[in-house]
Length: 365
View 1 (cartoon, rainbow, N blue to C red):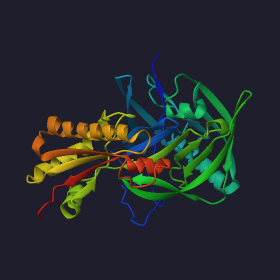
View 2 (cartoon, rainbow, N blue to C red):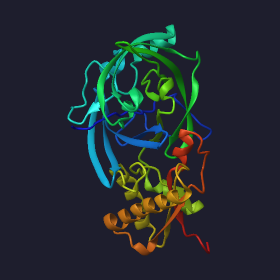
View 3 (cartoon, one colour):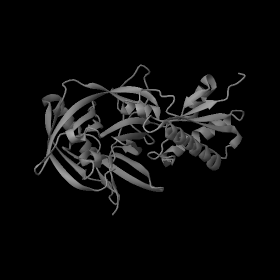
View 4 (tube, one colour):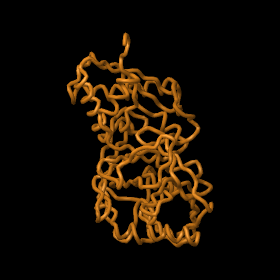
């Protein structure tokens, strides 16, 4: 049986971002933005990375390069998706899963947001009708199927309403190129049914009529330990940005590097970010760099240290083997969970702590 996976799209629009250090995002969204969603279960945070390939008058097209490591086997698949502008404007139906053999085109549905029309009715009336075509995973329920990680799943059409759970927008955390920002979000509550079954998800969407994207799903009471959340936006960064930080501060975080769940296997989306490191090393031939790996605190300290060592080892191998960087210029250090940037008690905090940093040898300068 071909695997079925789910993707949620994350796009930034004017007026949606708020931060003490205002980030600069290409608006409207352009090709190259990567969006990371996390399905959080009691066993850990599983990230999936989605990259916009095209954003134009007809809608949005993007890819998801799936990487999973199970029992020593590495599964790689590439999915392509499209969401049409007419549906982004008017549809009252939401499609939140995709088959590996599908074209990824489902006219009449939005895929990663509610439509602008539904958004307007929610803001004016506080409630609206909706249909959600989802997968139901036998082991994780509808929310697990949203993340694409259930052991088996079947399509289910849920019908009902969504309504404002709080009257005013709330602040929602997102990482933009590794930096914490807040976006204005609407907190919604669903009342959905399929035959004699009920689904009452809590949903957060971007409070922006241009594209009210899904930011967070929390399932019914029996599934509250499973959360699907948009955690990160990484857009192409010129190597000169990281170069400037390394020149002045001798340290810079490297956004855009992704690994399979609990693994050192690189997602191919990471290649662009690693190539930028090779470019700055080619320009600054006297620089030596230490690649520091950091993890969240899920699992033992020893296991996290080993994982972080293997992950930066994979980055080093890519730099040496694909870009010809001299091995003597690259050191690695696995820090594990010893140096968190934020508390590991939240999804966004753990995402902030899973990172790769570049440290320049500035001794004597």
